Length: 356
Image 1 (spheres, rainbow, N blue to C red):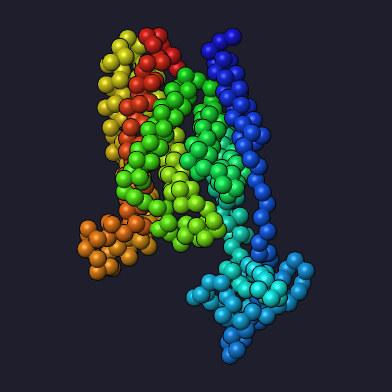
Image 2: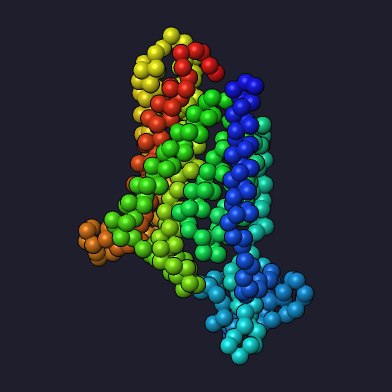
């Protein structure tokens, strides 16, 4: 049995064992009852009375909704608009309806189709493999990580466990079985563990509660413990970093193997030095990209920060601001550490022989 066959066998055993533990040993999801949602189409908007007439597309029923029963304010509804209607029940048991939002799924589907087509046409087999990896990642998040957190599981444990399930599958699908891929996997896992520890320490000493956002506060109202909400913050950092670590570690491992292929006589020390020199450029570009991604996601918060009368010191002590700073800095540190870690692992595993 050659090296790659052994790696494939180990990965298969790893995935089977983790799946057995996660789907049979740990508690299963419990379905919860709640409001019902229906697709609807606006038939009439009465500007004088503020009543909107909506036909529910599931059974053709027509309901009238007043302006004060619209879930989101500031939306300009017109006749023919497709909307999402929520059916709820008041304390007396009477059903009532309100408009939750516009129905945007058709636009999103077409955008997704365009994304899949371009990924497949440009990336070909590797693009198709990366799409399969993306689908697998979402399946793990939505069918394993999130459901177990919802039934009271520890967010840190299940986020890390979910990441450990995702890593080997997406790496092998996207990059195939090779020493380069396994070196990148090892570098990713080590960097992810270090980042998790750093995030835990940072959240503890900065006394972040995880309740800064409205969504987190709503989870607190649903009975999820404060510790679990703090864990969600940590879990979000881990899962968010996982995607960009893939790019960094695979690129760095590929660089090491290409340098060795170009000059098989390079010692491990010389190989590490040359790879790190290029890796520093990679760090500079990716760190800037990561910071801009986080800044873009937090743009409304940045506008509030600039327009606020708070001083700089007061502003950074506001939890929602501190939370974004911790998230950005911890993820960036993890990204920086991934470069030397992966480079060392690849140099160590490549040995003195030429290996592609």
